[in-house]
Image (tube, rainbow, N blue to C red; front, side, top):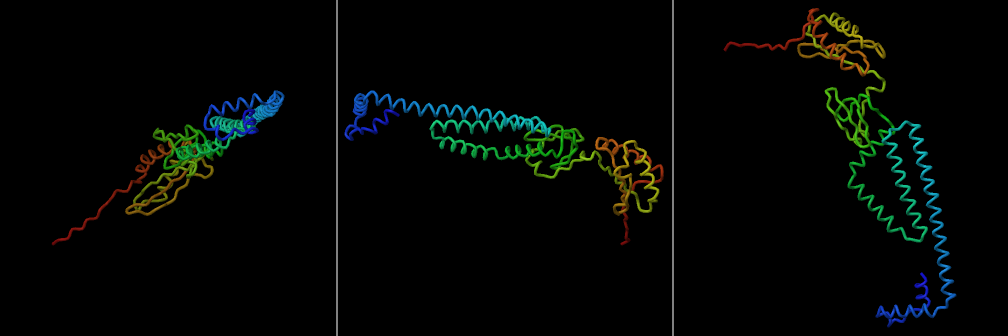
Length: 304
């Protein structure tokens, strides 16, 4: 800075700029000719101004670091109060720490007098490029945050979403894992999951179980209803809340009608009672003269 001030105070002749050696020689002569007290005064002035900037930068950095720690502590307490998932808490703390640390470093450097415009522009450009390259991943990332914050389901719930149904075994930041009743592991991207329809059977703890039974025309419907309902009522897993077991005639088909038996059961008991009642219907209906419809075809033969 001193050297620049001296050059500005006594410009170098234009013809001497042609040779670097001439410039250096002229600069040395200028410094030699400058009084010592002026050199000391200029150096002290520059040192004082730069020292103040250094102290200000140190103070800003220390205060900023303290504020970042306080903010992280506050976020951790909020996450614990809301019982957020540990993976989401870790992500929020890391994201907050990195973002605020970058902001603090840029601010500290700018206080020292360094132009940070190019640095900020580089960060912004890098962010845009990374965002475009990882658009799908970032969508799943955002979806995972939404699921972990608003909790439309939790581990252990039985859900139907994206054409699959099963028990949730894990909720990660980018994907959700479910196990289907036939023990298939399905991994659902959180982006599509958070934007789609989710049917959570575990919200109330109960699920309706349906059995559609076909009986031929002419069957004693009252007898069929009573036999079916008695089989359902005897099962220990059947509950009467929110409604007791009931039956409806739901449709008329070619050669038979369909009786729909319905009962409420606990979510965990759904498949056990479903298969148990299927077997009971198969065994007990024929014993009571209630046979399944047999497909028939009428053939008319005409003599030529």
